[in-house]
Length: 189
Picture 1 (tube, rainbow, N blue to C red):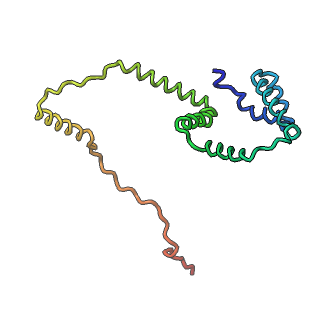
Picture 2 (picture 1 turned 30 degrees about the horizontal axis):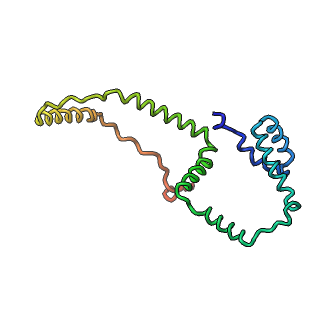
Picture 3 (picture 1 turned 135 degrees about the vertical axis):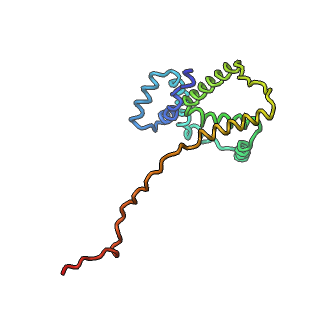
């Protein structure tokens, strides 16, 4: 379970920057403290420094080497082949990429949803043994059913009918002032 919720994976880009020597000073202390506490990350960082150390001296060590003329053609063919889908392998790669992009960032949420679905499935399976309620066999004749239905309609109509209410007196209208044009001025003599 600890591997599933492993938090060191998000620090790996910082390990790469530290091995290359371009990690800012404030973050270096945090990363070195983590490296001192985590043996797995220490091994990973050791592998990175071995590779970056060899690459740091590339110009001096391999300046005399030049690729053959066929090398760029092989590289172009390899790049073109990498872009083509390979059937089942491409599906596996797509699933792996989807897992990495969708599931891993929110793995706790997905784990909670999976637990909820397991509980729902267990509840449904436990209820599957319960026999459903059975309806009584219909032995009444059609005319008796129609008569019963009409009686039920009459009862329902009586229940839904509003009781007789006394008529209320008409309410006075709301006060609305007269427009200015209708107001008469009192003339003072």
